[in-house]
Length: 125
Length: 280
Image 1: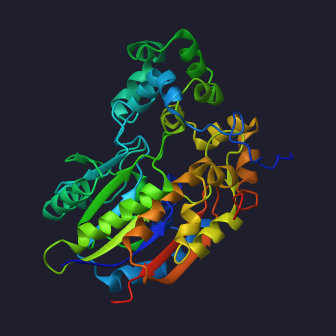
Image 2 (image 1 turned 120 degrees about the vertical axis):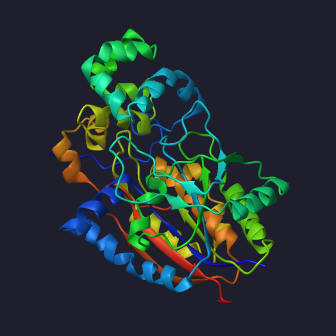
Image 3 (image 1 turned 30 degrees about the horizontal axis):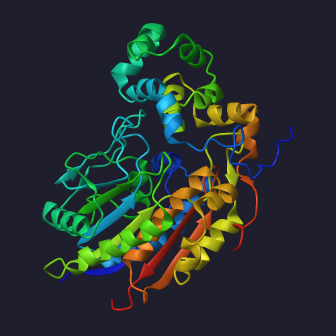
């Protein structure tokens, strides 16, 4: 498996620079995700995920992203990585699953590829 | 009056904490043993420096603060700062102690010098501090901590220039604190890393080593680099390096380089630099 070298792009899908408008867009996703820091909330979510997400006013499309473990889709929908990580943890996945999904790689390939070394200094230095 | 005795900049990551807990009870992952060994001189420095107070400029990762109310600058003023449960359960470490008298002095000074921070009497601390802390000291923690959280999770984040000025203001606050307390100033964040997007896991050792080589005596040069440039070549989360400018700004121009170390265990550039005030 050849893993591509990271580019210098700050645009999606290479990078998600988290901004205010993304935060507004992802408000419900983030509130839902961060609630999963508490063990009792993780239990309630795992027992009936649809009902639990309804409590946080997630749309059908947002719920589908969660059910599909579409980590990239959740980031595009305004979810913050640190929040999405709480969902991944609750369902037994990890940061590696998110990273692999974002880069369209198998988890084992992503783990094997890291650190993905690049070089270079900022412009003008 | 109190005095700044020195400080250090250090990386943080959840895995750093996790690998410590695993390593200390059995066998360290070889990649993390390198980091553990590399921090031993920092541990010795901190023990010999004997600080009475430790100011830590760090960032939270949506583990205490949420976007319902996310402060750009927040100072914790409380007797105790408990560990935040990030969703993995608490690690086997006690809360950090705080010194409210010192905390309110710094709060007053900073606001009077145009840093209008949010003051928090309840502040739970995540891996931003807890991940590296056991590598450099052990419970009971050696001194009270004054945690200053800076927004690094949602843009706009404070500029590099602003963080340098924050450090200079912290220095002023310490220098005006009655008594003869010895104060260490620590900053934590970075180095090169990106943990989302197709560039996940990128590592730029060239940049990280450049940063370490220039922080002591070329602060103007580093502060002038646009944060977007740092994110472009070092990853979106490399922007956290701006926090190190607060540490450097809190130290005098005469502060000298004592030690630095760098490694890249897996997905986060892990570096440290220790600076000491000549007067000590």
